[in-house]
Length: 349
Image (cartoon, rainbow, N blue to C red; front, top):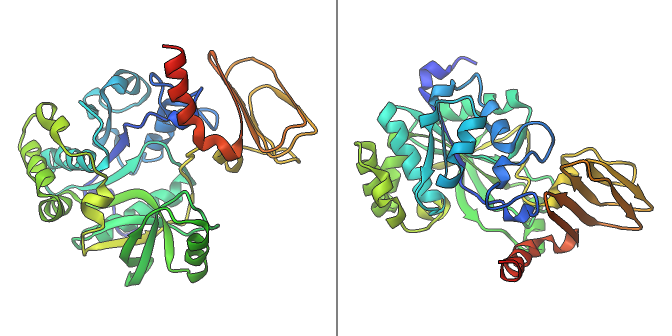
């Protein structure tokens, strides 16, 4: 690559405020998704941060998380402790992005920042880093860059980017952001070839995103500028309206481009998604932990301890053991895990 990190003043800010309730019983209020090891080895947030090295040095990596998780994240990451920042209250991704831009501007008013979630699976790291360098080079032109994942099936669980004219090799202007579609619409998106999955990974100059906040979400832009100049975000962060960065800025801006992502990407949003990232047996069962399956297919079996799980005659079912909790449900019903949690909270206060 002819462009280097030194040319681009690259920083990274990882958004790690989620609770991971879809992954109960492994995911708990005290242990959110980003602190789980779902694919073996490191936790999700460790994988996210290590994937950035050595492109971005540890001192230029920040993590914004729930204040309850600051201590544990500091313990697992090899970055300066002060670079792990706790939000006083979760206010969605737009206030988080504003705070991220303020933190980078404090360090370097001309810095270019990568804003990314803490809980995505991306492989290989080299292809990811090469894409970030290309995207950062485009960001120098004063545009907001997002990474679009070429869809491989008609997904109804992802948002989409509608691509327009070419902006540069591998990059297109974004005509519109589309919310999670129904099955028929998703099929149309797939057939046209004009759509990409919205990865939620952004690259932009800190001054450019600040300008776009002032234009499209002036209330947050005002706070961003205040925090960048040394204002104490802990005093007024909770006052921010709860809104996503897509709604607040990206869907309104006329300077958004998308770069194609030539790497494997999975946001691992549910137990079912583990079937695409864990090795499967000849019957399509994805297993993590000790388990014996008989006459069963298409299942996800997950155990974090030495508990031996036996499964007979099950199909397309999640069997999950973690701590003092066990979940058994058809994979087609796993979106109801949050409802189950609400029932559990009422029954076992």
